[in-house]
Length: 187
Image (tube, rainbow, N blue to C red):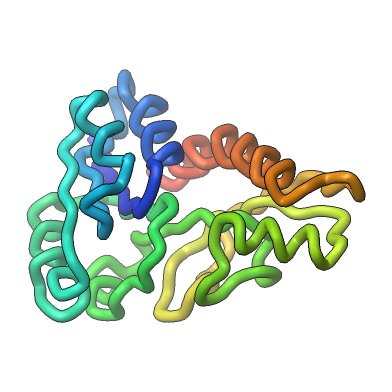
Protein backbone atom coordinates (compact mmCIF):
# COMPACT_ATOMS: atom_id res chain seq x y z
CA UNK A 1 0.00 0.00 0.00
CA UNK A 2 1.43 3.38 -1.08
CA UNK A 3 1.21 6.07 1.58
CA UNK A 4 0.39 9.75 0.90
CA UNK A 5 0.72 12.71 3.25
CA UNK A 6 -0.98 15.95 2.19
CA UNK A 7 -0.04 19.48 3.25
CA UNK A 8 -2.75 22.16 2.96
CA UNK A 9 -3.23 25.69 4.28
CA UNK A 10 -6.85 26.52 3.56
CA UNK A 11 -10.20 25.08 2.63
CA UNK A 12 -8.82 21.71 1.58
CA UNK A 13 -10.95 21.03 -1.49
CA UNK A 14 -7.99 19.40 -3.28
CA UNK A 15 -7.12 17.40 -0.16
CA UNK A 16 -10.71 16.18 0.13
CA UNK A 17 -10.76 15.28 -3.56
CA UNK A 18 -7.59 13.20 -3.16
CA UNK A 19 -8.86 11.51 0.01
CA UNK A 20 -12.14 10.56 -1.68
CA UNK A 21 -10.39 9.44 -4.86
CA UNK A 22 -8.20 6.96 -2.95
CA UNK A 23 -10.79 6.02 -0.31
CA UNK A 24 -11.54 2.56 -1.70
CA UNK A 25 -8.14 1.99 -3.30
CA UNK A 26 -6.24 -1.21 -2.61
CA UNK A 27 -2.98 0.49 -3.65
CA UNK A 28 -2.97 4.03 -2.23
CA UNK A 29 -3.97 5.54 1.11
CA UNK A 30 -3.97 9.16 2.26
CA UNK A 31 -2.69 8.55 5.77
CA UNK A 32 -2.41 12.10 7.09
CA UNK A 33 -3.04 15.77 6.40
CA UNK A 34 -0.80 18.43 7.89
CA UNK A 35 -1.61 22.14 7.97
CA UNK A 36 0.14 25.33 9.04
CA UNK A 37 -3.24 26.91 9.83
CA UNK A 38 -4.98 25.78 13.03
CA UNK A 39 -8.25 27.28 11.70
CA UNK A 40 -8.02 25.76 8.21
CA UNK A 41 -11.24 24.29 6.88
CA UNK A 42 -9.21 21.26 5.78
CA UNK A 43 -9.18 20.13 9.44
CA UNK A 44 -13.00 19.92 9.44
CA UNK A 45 -12.98 18.06 6.14
CA UNK A 46 -10.48 15.52 7.51
CA UNK A 47 -12.56 14.98 10.63
CA UNK A 48 -15.63 14.18 8.49
CA UNK A 49 -13.56 11.89 6.25
CA UNK A 50 -11.93 10.16 9.24
CA UNK A 51 -8.37 11.06 8.19
CA UNK A 52 -5.71 12.04 10.72
CA UNK A 53 -4.95 15.76 10.59
CA UNK A 54 -2.53 17.92 12.56
CA UNK A 55 -1.65 21.59 12.58
CA UNK A 56 1.83 22.92 13.24
CA UNK A 57 3.56 26.27 13.57
CA UNK A 58 6.53 27.75 11.74
CA UNK A 59 9.01 26.68 14.44
CA UNK A 60 7.87 23.03 14.25
CA UNK A 61 8.11 23.20 10.46
CA UNK A 62 11.33 24.98 9.65
CA UNK A 63 13.28 25.59 12.87
CA UNK A 64 13.02 22.15 14.50
CA UNK A 65 12.67 18.53 13.43
CA UNK A 66 9.07 18.19 14.67
CA UNK A 67 7.39 18.02 11.26
CA UNK A 68 10.31 16.10 9.80
CA UNK A 69 9.93 13.48 12.53
CA UNK A 70 6.17 13.24 11.89
CA UNK A 71 6.94 12.60 8.23
CA UNK A 72 9.65 10.05 9.00
CA UNK A 73 7.28 8.09 11.21
CA UNK A 74 4.53 8.28 8.57
CA UNK A 75 6.88 6.80 5.94
CA UNK A 76 5.11 8.41 2.96
CA UNK A 77 5.73 7.33 -0.61
CA UNK A 78 4.60 10.78 -1.75
CA UNK A 79 4.11 14.16 -0.06
CA UNK A 80 1.47 16.25 -1.81
CA UNK A 81 1.15 20.01 -1.37
CA UNK A 82 -2.47 20.93 -2.06
CA UNK A 83 -2.86 24.63 -1.48
CA UNK A 84 0.03 24.78 0.97
CA UNK A 85 1.43 28.31 1.15
CA UNK A 86 4.74 28.01 2.98
CA UNK A 87 8.08 27.38 1.33
CA UNK A 88 9.22 23.82 2.08
CA UNK A 89 12.43 23.65 4.17
CA UNK A 90 15.49 22.29 2.36
CA UNK A 91 16.27 19.81 5.15
CA UNK A 92 12.86 18.13 4.66
CA UNK A 93 13.27 18.15 0.87
CA UNK A 94 16.69 16.46 1.25
CA UNK A 95 15.17 13.75 3.43
CA UNK A 96 12.34 13.17 0.92
CA UNK A 97 14.16 13.82 -2.35
CA UNK A 98 11.86 13.77 -5.42
CA UNK A 99 8.94 12.79 -3.20
CA UNK A 100 7.29 16.20 -2.73
CA UNK A 101 4.90 17.56 -5.37
CA UNK A 102 2.77 20.70 -5.60
CA UNK A 103 -0.18 21.88 -7.66
CA UNK A 104 -0.06 25.49 -8.90
CA UNK A 105 -3.04 27.37 -10.40
CA UNK A 106 -1.22 28.65 -13.49
CA UNK A 107 0.93 27.43 -16.36
CA UNK A 108 4.38 27.72 -14.85
CA UNK A 109 6.80 29.39 -15.29
CA UNK A 110 4.16 32.13 -15.69
CA UNK A 111 2.60 33.49 -12.49
CA UNK A 112 4.75 31.54 -10.07
CA UNK A 113 6.86 32.60 -7.13
CA UNK A 114 6.38 34.01 -3.67
CA UNK A 115 2.93 35.51 -3.15
CA UNK A 116 1.52 33.98 -6.32
CA UNK A 117 -1.32 31.78 -5.14
CA UNK A 118 -5.10 31.63 -5.43
CA UNK A 119 -6.84 34.82 -6.48
CA UNK A 120 -3.50 36.67 -6.79
CA UNK A 121 -2.72 34.39 -9.74
CA UNK A 122 -6.19 34.61 -11.31
CA UNK A 123 -6.25 38.43 -11.01
CA UNK A 124 -2.84 38.63 -12.72
CA UNK A 125 -3.99 36.32 -15.53
CA UNK A 126 -7.06 38.51 -16.20
CA UNK A 127 -5.15 41.81 -15.84
CA UNK A 128 -2.57 40.64 -18.38
CA UNK A 129 -5.27 39.60 -20.88
CA UNK A 130 -3.99 36.04 -21.10
CA UNK A 131 -5.77 33.88 -23.67
CA UNK A 132 -5.14 30.70 -21.69
CA UNK A 133 -4.15 29.54 -18.26
CA UNK A 134 -4.23 26.25 -16.42
CA UNK A 135 -2.65 24.13 -13.73
CA UNK A 136 0.86 22.85 -13.22
CA UNK A 137 1.77 19.85 -11.11
CA UNK A 138 5.48 19.93 -10.32
CA UNK A 139 8.16 18.60 -8.02
CA UNK A 140 9.05 20.90 -5.15
CA UNK A 141 12.58 22.23 -4.80
CA UNK A 142 14.16 24.96 -2.67
CA UNK A 143 12.55 27.77 -4.73
CA UNK A 144 8.86 28.64 -5.05
CA UNK A 145 7.30 27.01 -8.13
CA UNK A 146 10.61 26.18 -9.86
CA UNK A 147 10.71 22.38 -9.53
CA UNK A 148 10.54 20.09 -12.56
CA UNK A 149 7.13 20.10 -14.24
CA UNK A 150 5.26 16.79 -14.14
CA UNK A 151 1.99 17.78 -15.84
CA UNK A 152 0.08 20.79 -17.16
CA UNK A 153 -3.54 21.19 -18.26
CA UNK A 154 -4.85 24.28 -20.02
CA UNK A 155 -8.12 26.17 -20.29
CA UNK A 156 -9.20 29.15 -22.34
CA UNK A 157 -9.53 32.59 -20.78
CA UNK A 158 -12.28 34.59 -22.46
CA UNK A 159 -12.09 38.38 -22.72
CA UNK A 160 -15.26 38.50 -20.59
CA UNK A 161 -13.86 36.25 -17.83
CA UNK A 162 -13.40 37.69 -14.36
CA UNK A 163 -10.77 36.38 -11.94
CA UNK A 164 -13.61 34.46 -10.26
CA UNK A 165 -14.50 32.81 -13.61
CA UNK A 166 -10.86 31.83 -14.07
CA UNK A 167 -10.75 30.43 -10.51
CA UNK A 168 -13.76 28.20 -11.29
CA UNK A 169 -12.12 26.89 -14.47
CA UNK A 170 -8.88 26.16 -12.60
CA UNK A 171 -10.78 24.39 -9.82
CA UNK A 172 -12.38 22.06 -12.38
CA UNK A 173 -8.95 21.24 -13.85
CA UNK A 174 -7.56 20.54 -10.38
CA UNK A 175 -10.44 18.25 -9.44
CA UNK A 176 -10.13 16.30 -12.69
CA UNK A 177 -6.37 15.92 -13.06
CA UNK A 178 -4.69 16.07 -9.64
CA UNK A 179 -5.82 12.64 -8.34
CA UNK A 180 -4.99 10.99 -11.68
CA UNK A 181 -1.45 12.39 -11.73
CA UNK A 182 -0.86 11.45 -8.07
CA UNK A 183 -2.08 7.94 -8.90
CA UNK A 184 0.27 7.73 -11.93
CA UNK A 185 3.26 8.87 -9.85
CA UNK A 186 2.59 6.13 -7.30
CA UNK A 187 2.44 3.31 -9.86
